[in-house]
Image (cartoon, rainbow, N blue to C red):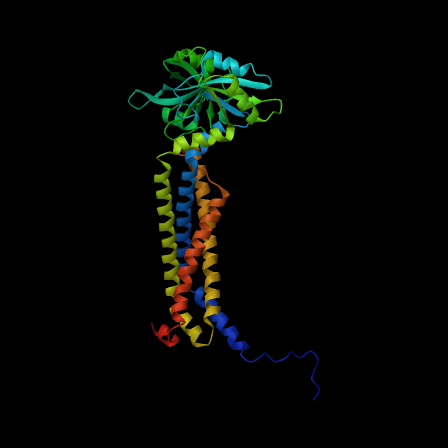
Amino acid sequence: MHQSSDAQPPPPPGAGARRSRRHLLHRGLRSRPGRAALTLSGVAASALLVLVLLAAYRGLGASVASYTGQPDIDLWVGPQGVDNLIRSSAMLLPEQISDVQEIEGLRAEPLVRGFVPVEGAPDEDGKPRSMLLLAIGYRIPDGLGGPPQVAEGQRPAGPQEVALDRAAAYRLGLKVGDEMKVGGQTVKLVGLTRETNLLSTQLLFCDVAALQQAMGLEGRASFVAVRVEDGRDPKEVARQIEEETPGGAAWERQVFVENSVREITTGIVPLLFLIAGLGAAMAAVLVALLVNGLIEERRPEIGVLLAMGTSAFAVGGAVLCHILTLVIIGALTGTALALGLDAALDRWVPTIELASAPSDCLVAALLFSVSGTLAALFPVAMLSRIDPLEAFRS
């Protein structure tokens, strides 16, 4: 009998069985949405923990790097032995400042830094809130070394105006336009700055002449901020400054940033690194336990598949695909939660600085993918070595 050309060839032997095994495998893996949702939630919470710890670790030196790394400043000039912003008790003398300013092709402006007592709004008991802040005196309104970023308000335009870090303003109960006392002198708060929270203290920006007078440092400076205006090599300029300024030292911007970050993080970074490392390890273990529990509940389905002749490699691949899907979705959910937390803290509790980076999500996803993969494939490997019917009965 002549067969129609439209007739389909018969399925190869075993094709129906393979389709049944694949259907059973996918059905078994997706048959417990409650457990899968619990696993996804655990991964998301673990990702949130790791991302916050990494952001806190990075944020420790982010503010000092933001200020000292301003692109307008090519060189930082200070007394010999002073190589960072944080610890600098020595001062440049008037003649040293003049030596730097007399070099052609430079824009050189003195900066004064020093701790000053600040009084803000009264608290619930009527007592004024007070803090000790690190004041930076620069030539206002547009001199070198001013605020790296103004979040609200404007830069100071006169000697009786100051800008203050948002976290300090929050603690002092101040807002833009309020009056406050700095070193006993009444000034007006005209701007709130961002990326100026050093955790142990915050930055306050004011007129350099006013700060010199308040601290009894007329004519002297903590540093001279230098901008190379004629395209000369900053390294050559630094050597020239040191040759023509006895007792002075010049530091390139990146070196000064590294020195300042090292100084502010010394003693704290090891502890924070330990906390972040332990937190990441605990999160990885939690993900592994959740994934292992998810797979252990599927022992009967896996046992049936192995008894039907499905290879352990095929079962492991399907399990791995399912687990990695949960891990990636959980990591993305945790990233969204971390970004939301960062935005909420930035809006309502600016005292906590988090410095997130896109690479953090990749780190969390990779960490959990490795731990989840090991936790998922180990039970499959163990089941493939025993009687599948025994695994089904258990």
